[in-house]
Image (tube, each protein chain N blue to C red):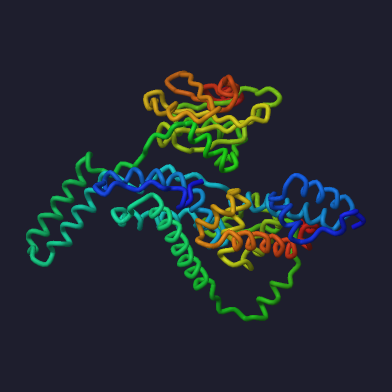
Length: 199
Length: 253
């Protein structure tokens, strides 16, 4: 994993945008999985995370002459991905405003969940065929975590990064990163302990 | 909770789940877990949550069509910059000429944006894949889909002949390497992670074996116009021989 502080390479002052391009592209390629994890953490789901990273990269394209080092590029990219993902999340929240009778919502909420509950892929509208009800509950429970906590949890659990690396990527202290992960796990276990048997 | 060490504290328990305890501390917790059923259930549940997280948020490789940087983009940006600087004093006629020039330039084959691609040493990709958990991009267990992927990317179908016990294919990934179309097969051979890279022989590049990673071996073979590399810490190639050109025998009939 390459975090901003890992990359000590400083670009020569006379390097043209054309020469810098391939270096930045290689960096982008190697950090794409972690960038996507940050986007997914902010969004709260995987769908749309890659698009967010691509959007941030396209903005970086127009700014590449400003990057003096690999570290500055990576720091900028992680920050841009977070901001783009936040914008996307806000857009989705706005789109989810329905003019629905609250009593109907209550009715739906009270319906018993069945073991074969399936979620719908928001991009294709198709049922996610191999998604279990437990994963549905997990995705719902993740929405109760803060965006920063979700990012920490994903970078630690899925990408197996050290707390030092997570701290550098998210610009937070290591202790905060660890605290986010531990508290998130506790909260998820608490919320999902009653769901385990139903799945 | 009858262990001689007493109940497990929350911070100790979280550190145990996190894998940050020393061997000695871990042994104590394991001992305590024997008599603490609630905590044992929590460990089981946490395992299930972690598994579901990995499934719902898989590690994704960079997309094949990496349009981040192209030669044409460079020229386009330069042209745009010049145009912006002069637009206050250049008349409409000059602007029209410039647009015409750009349009004709786009029409030429040489001006077409070509996706940026830089070959990467295969040992480096192997190391990065290991660091990311050695998860395939696509867990392909359907012979026809498997063959179709190679037919699409390498121009000819491929199949796996039966593998012996201890050797199994995990799936396919598209991590680049020799070209944007390089297809990689992830395998486990006697619990050792192995990657097999396949691409057209004409895109073979000496960078494939460059920048050797310590203890990582790169083996090469050429078959039917394809170049096949196997990368692992094993002393000999153990997986590439099972990858054969042509559709799976059942499909071929």
